[in-house]
Amino acid sequence: MYLSQPMRVDEAATYLFYVRKPPLYGLVSYTLPNNHVFHTLLVSVSTFLFGDHPWAIRLPAFLAGVAMIPLAFAAARRIHGDAAGLITAAFVASSSVLIEYSTNARGYTIVAAIFLGLLALQPALLRGEARAWRWFAILSAIGFFTIPTMLFPFGVVVAWLAVSIARARVKVWKQLARGVGLTIALAAVAYLPAILWTGPHAVFANRFVVSRPWSVWLTLIWPSIHQTWLGWNRDLGVAGMVLFGVFFAAGLARDKTRLAIIAVAWCALLVVVERWIVFPRVWTFLIPVYWMTVSVGIVFAFRRRWVVPVALAACVAIGGSVVASGSVLASRDGYFPDAERVAIALDHVGPDASVLAFNPATVPLQYYVVLRHEAMRINAPRASDRRLFIVVDNAVGQTLPDVVRGYDGTCDLHCCRRSGLG
Image (cartoon, rainbow, N blue to C red; front, side):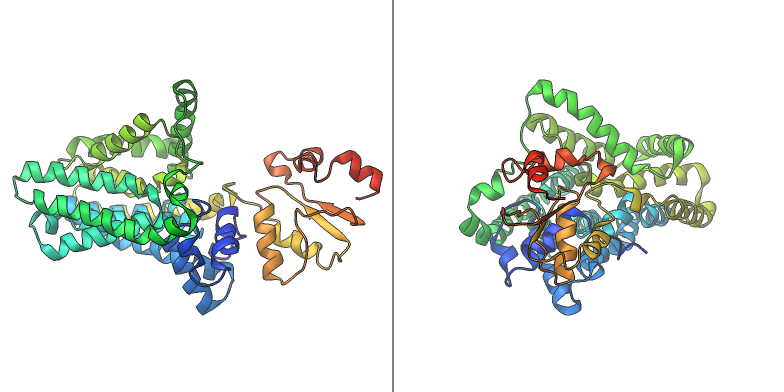
């Protein structure tokens, strides 16, 4: 339903700045953390096969998002049993945020799917199966190769495995150490082309994730947590949020594996020690853990005979609510839904005209200009231009003077009026 929705800023940038370049450019260029390298390579294959349509650009993220449903079932089933697995799969299938990021060409669903795969490997890992430990290292390295924020889910898995090993008193500590070491080695090899071409600072000094002063961090952390929590529970209403909160608390009390507690503890430790303010989308991988814990509480309350009706009811009710509310399309995360219409309206503006715009309008507009093979100049006004078109996104509070003043010497409103540009 949402595969062909209007393109958003980050996914359009992935296509324009990396995928559209010569082959393997995304492998060596890490000029922005927007380049989720493994995902970028998959998008390159997808667009080579199917063209540069929005659905083709989103296909890798979509397939990973769909794969999360059986992976969530497998992980929850092996950890908590069949009943919890089925209900978890229903919640994952109908989650508004997971649907959004399964139709947004970013690497977050790939990381989440890998995380679930690692959780599902736990019994085999505890038995010391060599093949399982090899897959542990390979999948973890692919996660890091997708986004460095794999540090969060990888740390959760390692900490959880360490606790499980200690409780089960199995002798697989050496396998765990070798698995972590092999993961680091494989990830380093994968990023080596980018480090040699772009420089190590690009990978290890992300300017978008920096330590904040304590006073600033304490001011920003609670709004960030609140925004994330509301996103996870959107379309559920206050009653649904409270109800599932109760089930989550019940599941937390009955979860002997302590997966949810370990996940929160590890992520909180990193965020506090580094004083990071993390984008809510980074926590996408935790959504299945939340629903897994809720499912444990539901199974305890309703017993096994009600599992299938509860799973079906949850999937239909929540999924229906997502569709009815339009929450996926209402999400303002890098969204300028009129980009294609603006590109059509400005078609053939001529060589004597330029277009000014700010994100979230700029990059999606550039994508649709490229898609339509137009020669429109965006954000490159010249003194010889006879006309200047300015795109203002009122939905995010932009005004005409704000957009013009943002070009810092390129053009100002007084200059435009004096030159007769409109």
